[in-house]
Amino acid sequence: MLEHLGAQVMPVRRPAELAEVDGLVLPGGESTVIDRLTGLTGLREPLREVIAGGLPVLGTCAGLILLAERLRDGGPGQETFGGLDVTARRNAFGRQTESFETDLVVPALEGRGADVPPVRAAFIRAPLIEEIGPAAELLAALPDGRAVAARQGRVLGLAFHPESTGETRFHELFLQVVREG
Ligand code: GLN
Image (cartoon, rainbow, N blue to C red; front, top):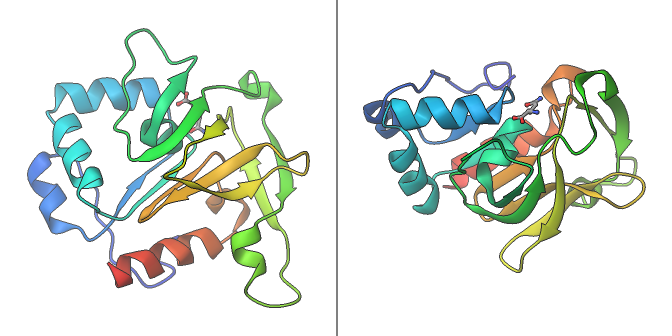
């Protein structure tokens, strides 16, 4: 998706590779595994430092969980990197079979013109944002008002996968943050 929007991308697996990027995507997947692997590879502390230091970050689904300052229903001993002043609940919608797609209300995108199409978002064993602290702001909510995306400065956290439905606007917003950064 980011390449399609004109960005150059590379995987980051080692701490030294963090110095080569202007922004970071924490993708979907399994947050307990990402947590464990970053602990084993020595990436966890460097990641915490660059995020706290203002590196632009886009976290989707598991990535949102990893950005949350506070986590409910985490795996045993699961840690997060922090950076986003929210309380996330992991697997808040239940099991994989309860995954779904829906249209989202996105106030941050609505300011951009009259006829803004809704965001079609895929929730794949997704987390929810149960509380947003004072340092973060709401970015997107379900039609019933539950928060599913938040932003704190250069850190964007989405509970859903915009890329799997072809939605480009959150990635465009992220690239705008990267360019400004
Ligand atoms: N349930 C996964 C977790 O706990 C997240 C799923 C996803 O990234 N689509 O990390």
